[in-house]
Each structure stands twice: as C-alpha cells, then as structure tokens.
Length: 420
Ligand code: GLU
Image (tube, rainbow, N blue to C red; front, side, top):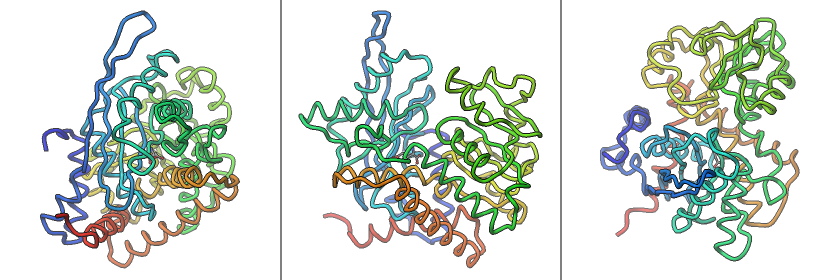
C-alpha cells in the first residue's frame, strides 16, 4: 500500500508474513490482520520563538480495533514517516496481544528533532499535535503514551490540551503522565525494569552468574538508561558499554552508570562523558559481552552484523532492532545467542501504561510496589509461554512471541465476524 511505502513498514510486513506462513493464515485474513485500520496525517503550523511560522508533519496510525481501543506511543523524531509509524503501530498490536492487554496497537508522532526546539516551541508543537488529533483519539478510542523524543512533560501538555477542549480533566487520554497529574508510580522506569527482569530470567535459565556477566547497552534515553542502571546496581552486572546518538563508550573495567546518568541529566548527551573511552558506535554492538541491549532505533542488527555479535543474551529493548535478514542468521546461532524479542522484552512500558489507564478510568491508585509486582507477573507469564512454544515447535523466540500475539488477534476477529 503506497501510503505506507517505507523500509520499516516492509520489514514489519515481512516479519508478519513469516508468522502468517507458520500459522497457515489464508490470504484474506493476512491482509485484514496486516494493514492498519486507520491512518491520520496532519499538518501542524507552529509559531517559532524567532517570530516565524513552521509547519510540521504529524501522524497517528491505529492498527486494529478488534480487542478494544488502540494504544501506543508518540514519537518525535526527524526521520519519522507514515510508513515507520504504521510499522510501529503493527508491532504494538502483537505486543499488546502477547501481554493479553485489551488493546489494538497504535503509534503516532511528529517529524521533528525535539533537541532543536526550545521548551516553548516543544510545548507549542505538542499542544498543536494533540489539538489536531482530538477528533480521532479518546479514552475509549485511542490512548497515547510516550516514545522516543517525548516524555512526561509532553504527555502533561497532551492531557491538558485534550482536557481544556472537553471542559474537564481527562487523565485517561494519555499514559506516562507525571504522577502529580494522575500518572502511575513506576511508569517511567517500567520499560527498562521489564527488560532487566527478563534478562535476569534468561540468565537464570542459562545458569549465568550476574556478578560474572558484562553488558553493553545501546541507547541512553528513558529505556536504555534505566536498563543500564538496573543491570549495574540491581542485578550486579558489569556494564562495559553504553551509547547515545552522539557517543559510544566502552570500558572493560566497567562504566560508572550513575555518573553517566548525572552527566546526561546536566548536559543532555553522553558526548563529553569519559572521552578517553570513546569508540565507533557501530563497533560497540560487536564487542564481546554477555548481555547486549539495543535500546535505541530500529534495524541496528542486520544481515551484515548479526554474524558478528558476540553476546550470549540479546535483549531487544528497542522496537524493531533486528531485521528479518539478521533473524535468519540468529536462528542458525540459536544455541549461542538467546534472543528476547522486542514485543516481549520492551512490553513493560505499555503494560504499566495499561495500569495507568485503568487507574485513570477508575480514579484509583496503586503503590509502586503493587505496580511493579503486577508488571513482573505479566512478563513472567509471557516469557514462560514464549519459551514453551519455541521449544515445543522448534521455532525462534520471535516467531513464538509474534505467533501468540497474531493468533489472539485473529481469533478475536473470527469471533466478532465481519460487518456487514
Ligand atoms: N512507546 C511504548 C512502546 O513502544 C509504549 C507507549 C505506551 O505506553 O503507550 O511500547
């Protein structure tokens, strides 16, 4: 479909076709499952601080409406396209279904580099985006959350803009809000914590001693930084590599992750951190380590470098970090590299978003301990199901995870039937 024409969308479709073949899904059902239900493109005119007006492109893709409202993050990134948004929405569908959340997948965002906007410009872009989306979203239609380039503050502006329009506070329109306005304790840390919970499960299964393990984390945003901190200070793993869009740091003696976090808090990037230990960001993925956590952008592990990875556990904290070409290689290396596929590995974020939505609808609050406990139970269940199916059918963890998600959506579509 030409409106989605994009490498990332093709990749999501190729991944889906592998699953559809494995599940022997017929052609009609494949198309029904694969193509997004709705896609919205908007143009956002925004006053800039210098008095000029700039227009930005915004998107929202709602992948399927079969299991409930759609749910998914909002990405502010300079290269965001409709096709990439559609791919991310499709992945959200399989991710929500794998965790048994009553949602279809969605994704949205604005083609903009948020680092190049002032705070007031970022606020105007955020508010205008939500303003344009008001006819298409709602607590029972489509619920936004954070993603790359957005944060709690952006979610607060979204909520405020929607609420001002309605005339009363609608906290359940977005998740990942600050706790002070109805956000859930532990949501910000949820994705990174979930990643590390699953890494610990994998280490346990593989009889690896965390104290003797090393990790490399690519990406130091909300997900990568929490994962690195949690690996270092909770699991006792030595983190020997970290990176962001500006720098990659490798130190076999171990990196002071707290210092890195404080540096990024002050300076916004790792660019000037531990400069003696900077390495080529592409090389970082191929350095020897026990746990490799890609927590940045899609397609970083591809046909060219998948054969070169030297890790025991690949924990996919990003969405779509591994291409289908890389999967073919990793499937052959199944006894060397234990893959925790993205729709399982990074599901912690949307799981706690689901709690936040439920809490908002019911005006009810849970403690951080309750939230984290419920999160780990859901992840545990999904992990066990994926491992069981992969073993029983001799398939990869990705095929098992996606198949569970796709099957649930297909079953629901069949039960509801086709109208008229
Ligand atoms: N951006 C998150 C993800 O990719 C989910 C956002 C949300 O909570 O809706 O899983």
